[in-house]
Length: 374
Image (cartoon, rainbow, N blue to C red; front, side, top):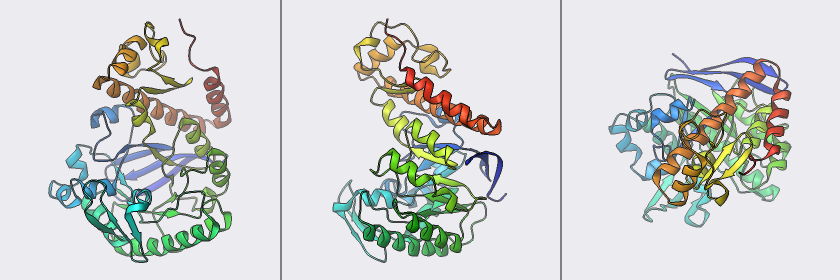
């Protein structure tokens, strides 16, 4: 079975469809939980699947350092290693290398950097990134790119984008012929419309199975990000999946889908869960707050996840404040469940030609705020 993408319905720029892979179908719009080091923190793989996730994201940078791509390959690849048999997307390592600006050296060939773990020296090139991701066995592979943090001046953004496009061609060449696996190109260009179009044109010329909008959610703010998304997805092929990298909060996700994005990932639901933060239909809830200490009600009475179905706010408050491991487990499960319900709601709304109504209800419910305290 080959990799393919089919659109089932559109509503304005919003789209719903299916990405088909040999390891299963991915319903779009799709949210990908982040399994940085071959685990979605505080979750069992089967529990992640129960939340409704069709695909996970693995992190090339972290996995190449520990336990190493070669070791994972010896154990049969990332799917077998982490006990997740459904699709996996791996990033290229470019974003993490960007965040190590003080520890890296950038050249036309690639990036040399020191490990944040032990200071050992490593090099990632487009060819090495493709090799690592092949060893991991991921279903969707990302081209190696360079992503400058925003704000940055136009000259720096243009130089970085053109380097990334040269690396995109090298990634395509190194990826080779891998039936059933897909390579996604990454559009760059900051908030500059003409640079985004130049990047998209080069990516279309090279040819990829999917396309990512990169270089956003790196400090520019939601208004600027949405301004870019008003045109960037439309610069990419209509018949291929579009992936917005590293996004985001629920309102970011709804706004991105409205503008034509099909796939997203973010550490936020799992990271928030480990710090006592829950995402609900009525906005964010901080379970550390004393107002929950004697509250017998569920976190969200409309939610069927274990945290809401079996435990009170008082219990969740207690385990969060006591720093018990179950706190992170329950709240991460809840957050991932909520995110997947959000995606399912958008898929249904697009199919019913009611995305505008869904968006209005989403914002109205969040504006109400959390339930009144007892």
